[in-house]
Amino acid sequence: MDKIFAATNEMLYQLSEEEFNRINEWYPIKVTSHIMSEISKKKSTRLAAQFLPDSRELQSDEGIGAFFPEEIHNTEIVVQKYPNRCMIYTTGVCFAHCRHCSRKEKWHEKNNFSYFLFDKAYLYINQNSHLEDVLLTGGDALANSDDNIEYMLEKLSAIAHIKSIRLATRAFTSFPDRITSKLCAILEKFNKVVVVTQFNCTDEFSDKTVAAIHNIQKTGTPILNQSVLLKGVNDEFRSIKDLFSTCAAHRVIPYYLFHCFNVKSVGHFRTNVELGEKIINNLVGNIGGWWIPRYILIPDSTGIKIPLCPNGLVEHSEASIRVKDYRGRILSYE
Ligand SMILES: *Cc1c(COP(=O)(O)O)cnc(C)c1O
Ligand code: SF4
Image 1 (cartoon, rainbow, N blue to C red):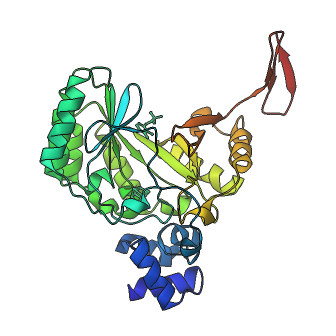
Image 2 (cartoon, rainbow, N blue to C red; image 1 turned 60 degrees about the vertical axis):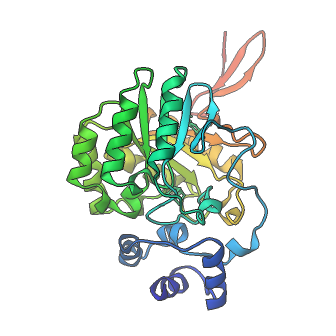
Image 3 (spheres, protein in one colour; image 1 turned 180 degrees about the horizontal axis):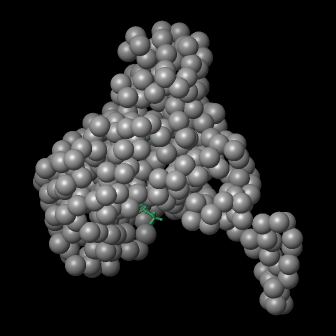
């Protein structure tokens, strides 16, 4: 902790020991030696802001908890918001605690994988054939042991109506050593699995990270990226453009860019919505189409994802459609 305290004061702000301890009590500080060494090697304030504590976490008590009124809890660990897909909370553990995490209220619970709860989740999904897509999340899905991951994938893969299984992890950024050859050998056995990760800036692409990406890809498993738009990390056009170009260079598919959730103690990371719209719309035409993720807004009242852009529609009336191309020309489309 002393090392983290020193690094915080060197990289970010002057935090008193008392503030540091108070933050740690509310929202436990957790980093890996990989993250610490990348922060110091690269002098990366963008990594520091994501993983080291900030006194503003104590100030902003605006915002809601991470859990939304409209989600349906089918079992203790299965949550559903959309007709054909659901999430399973497989563990409460993450390798590191992202300060902007929308589930940080849950960090205290420290739930571990449970066969009893997973089997109940499995039975529910097996009996509900409208469910086609399962997200294994947490925490970090790769914080589960290899045996437990294999167990979950084996069970879910065998369900005929399940078309895809997503494994959500930030191990590429926080703990790339987790992507072992043993884990890759497990992934190679399954053909419904997609890995979903979160890269928010190019500083996260260490040599170990890139090797881990390639090792996962060699198993035939695609990797999708979900970023969050974060003040002090990636709230500039250049930073976002470089991020998605770097993802693309490693065949990581930019899937979503989230507007930062309105969660307690995360307020200092939030930008306005226009910034995200502007950045994503400005990417259109200027970088490859598949390099551009959808910008997603999640209203507090529902917790349901709404894609905002890219969007070239200016106006749509009964008589005509007006659209805008990437050069800024407004055209009528009859
Ligand atoms: C976000 C989310 C999903 C996945 O949504 P996609 O738009 O398919 O990525 C599924 N279930 C829950 C509960 C979610 O919050
Ligand atoms: S890895 Fe995901 S769940 Fe874990 S702390 Fe980071 S954002 Fe939150």
